Structures are given as structure tokens and as C-alpha cells.
Image (cartoon, rainbow, N blue to C red; front, side, top):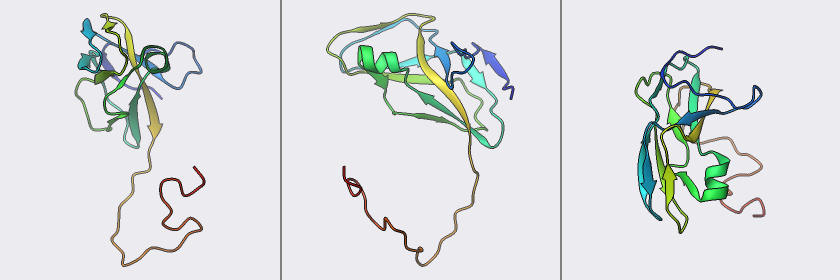
Amino acid sequence: MQIPVTGRVPVRQHPEDAGADLTSVDSVTIAPGELAEIHTGTTVALPEGTVGLVIVRSSLGFVHGVSLANGVGVIDAGYRGELRVKLVNQSSEQYRVNAGDRVAQLLVVPVHLCDFVAVESLEGSDRGRGGFGSTGA
């Protein structure tokens, strides 16, 4: 599948990688506990039936304590704006983002587009209404 891109093209570091890196066009220092909006300069035209998931690079979160402020960004197929990333510095040290740094990954995955229908009740299941911790945390 080929996806039209304007601006900076997301790049996979290895051909078999699921995520393609998004890079920063900004240079910014993020203080501990602070947020920063990072521009990637990337716009994409995702095909209908797919969704783009913007996720943190594992080295940012694991090594530096920097993560995405919204957890996972959802890019709908009809969106044509710039992909921006909001980073949060959860460490006790400043984190510097330089222009060209890899700041997130873009995964493009198929999505089942369905219609939701209101009903009076739902069929039962083995799990039932069990929520957080109901499977033995």
C-alpha cells in the first residue's frame, strides 16, 4: 500500500518495522513535568478503511521518561492536516528535542467501519460485566 505524503515522509528504520518514525521540525527544551507541541511537517492521505496511530518511540519513554501527552493519537482517513505530537516530560531532567529528531511512530492499520445500533439489552458472555482486575490482575 502506498500512502500520499506531503512534507516530511515518515521513515521505517528497518523494512519489517511496523512503525514509521515522525521527526520534529522544531527545536525545543521540555522542562520536567512540562508539555510541548512538536510539529512534524508531515501530512498524509490515509486510505478509507485505515487509521493512523501515533505512538511514542520506546526509547523516548523507556530511556528518557518522555511520552505522548494523549497516549495514542488517532489519525482518521479523512484528516489532511499536519501530524503534530504533544510530548510530556515525566522525568526529573530537561529533555531537548532538536529539529530532525525522531519524536513518535506512525502505524497504519486496517479498521472495521461499523454502524452502532441501539438495543434494549446485550447477549451475555463468559466475562459478563467484569471490569478492571476482573481477570486476576
